[in-house]
Image (cartoon, rainbow, N blue to C red; front, side, top):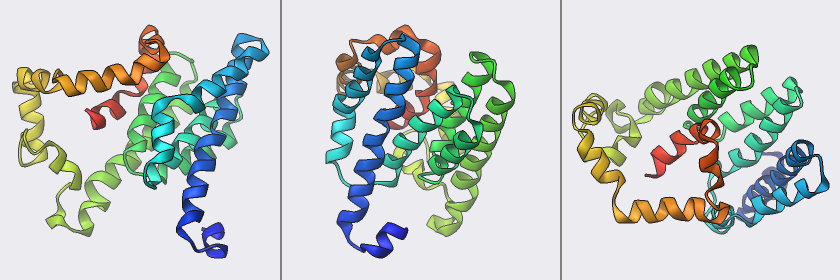
Length: 219
């Protein structure tokens, strides 16, 4: 806000978005350097910047969700270094970007508990993020219009006209869901996500699990 107040132009927020995303390469490079114990880890930061999905995001229109990429990158690094004050600040900033970010951070909190043995900070992350997203998605946002309905239900209207109907369809008609998920377009899109990374993320299902909410939104 202070930057936009000084320079009230569309270019200001677009520039801030690009800077936030690009600066996310720094914690990724530092994390890789520490884990690989070599300066070659810095190349991982370059891989992040060259990843087609990041490139597309930078070229696409402005959106608040994109800011969360940089905040989450820094948050993960601060958590890795056990700098929990800075970590919590990054989590809060990420949550402020958009309502569904909390669902991804909820899964990250579970990952911290199960895989990193960071039970306290993991529990705080998971519970606070889930509470934030559920409150935003089902109470705050619907209260602003659309007759109190969850605004994103329209994305899944072919499964039902209400949240309850959609859940029932998913549970009782898995073949319909499978047929939808295995369409040619979605398979090609999924391949395009992993191909630039040589499908290496598939070797770490526990980390890939954190992104499952994102794939659910996309596909």
